Image 1 (cartoon, helix red, strand yellow):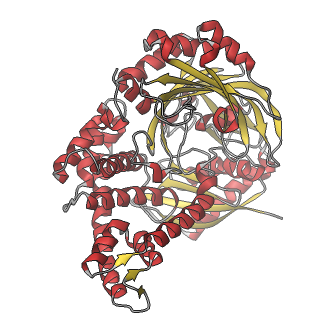
Image 2 (image 1 turned 90 degrees about the horizontal axis):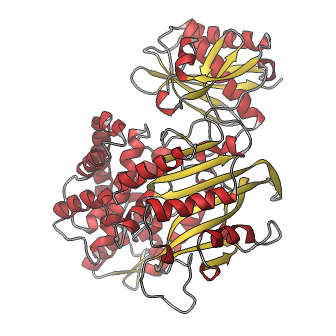
Length: 590
């Protein structure tokens, strides 16, 4: 079964079960400064898992594009990916274990026609936070899974949460016996030995973990499920790895042609990394993330440059990243037409980034020449591993390249010291980015809520002072400040900035009421609501009215009345590209 057929079959199955189809939204999180990218299917739904009513109701289903880089060093094996598609269905305070398990069994055995005798499951073994999940086990037995194929595992295997805090709970996971020989007497589902393939995960999300680590019951019990498209497609097609499916075969073939090598042996790891990273970068650029040295842009830059480094291992001499980006665009044209719409931008960004990196590598060679002649660095014909890591991190030199260059001069590299330096760097990087990648729990603190509401006021004030052609093209909010991007061809004058600021604060001083209504997108537009991100909206949307001053379609957190915001101060205005401006503002504390 092709991946496209799997996606269609999954979505259709749950729509028939009363679920509403969610849009496949941008990789850039909306109203969530805690994450750089959408990293799971449930990521856009956190506020609804916490109890906020969803415009489409209590049963939802989606196929969502996601991007994660926490385990980037694992990319190159048979199944790890940075970019992936995640199928999921949700119950927001509606159905519970019996329904979701029975439907999971029905989909696997009736829709995917999997051999019932090869399906194994795991359930939560229980601890101080939650009891042993005998309830799920009994439901599995009732549908046809014998108790001997049910495994009870601990939190590291059968507990899922959105992050260190937030919604969480025990889960049950489904595995398929691939028929491979057991790796040992203790081989079991979930041990990553390769015999049992994880298909699906049903999470029983009934707890909320507080910052102090304690658990409290959620306002409602939720179901959150996840099925990875790439992995499941590989399993259904009997492939040994995801890169042998139609989702990657075109990329691998192109890499083979460019490198003049086959996808086999030692070449596999490099080809997998190149294919994975450039697919991820292509999707990220299409969603507006350009390679840079900060946050999400840094991730895209790192992905492209890491792909180039592994291209060097395959002895690729000419520019190649844009060629592979084109393959991605062509391969996903049916599901993601925005890739083709942004084709020129994607190809240009890949080529420019590759050209920049080639210059960086040239400087690295010059640096290496200096290093190799320094007596203080070379000891006993051995190049310091710390220096080798410096070349790796600063100039993109893979350890293999440094070894080759050192060998030409009659030296060896202290690889043990290199890997130790790399490990220390990874630990530091993981700590610094874990809040951005791990959670996906949107910040709904009071300060963020105030500033988000203020963006509505700012948007309307800009339209009144400057032009009705002004519209929002992006925003980012932290507890300290708001950042608002909008269309306008000229730099704002100090007078215009003051007028906008005064108009915003005038509405706040009136303490206008904030009203939310649910309606169709068409009705919202008829009522004059601003709605510029139409690809993110469902058929039913939330419309927020700030008195008679502003009306917008939005899914973010808002105050109940504007007087709670306090005084807003614009602290900076700048250009962010042709025809686009950016404003930074803060709440002034009295």
